[in-house]
Amino acid sequence: MKWDVTPYRDTVMEYAKTLLAQDSPSGFTNRAVDAAEALARGLGYETRRSRKGNLTILVPGRDHSRKIGLCAHVDTLGLMVRSVTADGRLLITPIGGPLLPTLDGEYCRIYTRKGAVYTGTILSLSPAAHVEDDARTRPRDDKNMAVRVDEVVYSREDVAKLGIEAGDYVCYDPKTQVTQSGFIKSRFLDDKVSAACILAALKLMKDKGQKPRYDVEATFTVYEEVGHGGATFSPELAEMLAVDMGCIGEELSCTEEQVSICAKDSAGPFDYGMVSRLVELAQENGVSYAVDVYPHYSSDAAVAWKAGNDLPAALIGTGVHASHGMERTHWNGLKATMELIGLYLEAE
Image (cartoon, rainbow, N blue to C red):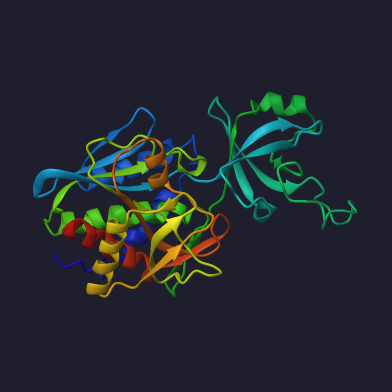
């Protein structure tokens, strides 16, 4: 099957925007899972959910003798209310590893357990340049930042009357934009653009009436950012290809216009045979790629191994600039990622 993904540029961008529009920090992911499931079912694929909340899309292959896995994650970074100050500001604790200094001034939504949603702004505890001597120098971390709620509150009691309490989720705006030059920039491209790439590849197969070589389980996990998303993959899988963001930076060769093939991350090397196969597929089919080693990175594949899953695994993903901050990638990187996913499903 020829994997010409160019006609699916608008599709992958729309899928990405749909997923990015759903607030879904780890542990609070139903909105994103619902959206991904609706897209998959709209394409005619069956789905199932694990007790933990992972969504698996079931893709029948031409040969049922083997089953392989794809995975991406739809949980994101976020915040949670830790406590409330005497004057009614919400102190926070991070979900995952957001770059907290980049959140100073960001708008957010606070979700209460009773279903109310309030808006607010994440700010330094010394927010006024005309008042506080340390407004410019105070650290931007979870001990020195808080949420200003957009309600008339002056005390802990006022906040309590709103139903806001410790443990409520604080979700900040992704600020998604697609530019005429082909970039998509947004928080949480890690890893919702990978989920969008998988969904767009599945749409391409469905549109062409094609099936992958073997049965496929494409799983979207919901706890990757806190380190245990991939701990419960099916024991029937022969191998797993994780699709997560590719890193860009010092000593790394990947760009936003390429698919990154990770040879090793902080958990150790990926399966040598799978990595070699992916490199060969990219070379033989003219896919723009880079092979890199990520020093500060882990993925669902590493978690699967640590949880005892007995299967080879590898990792690919579009090159993403400024990870865990204001992220950006390019259509060409998404295109290369979709091409390599398709080639893998056909060749494996």
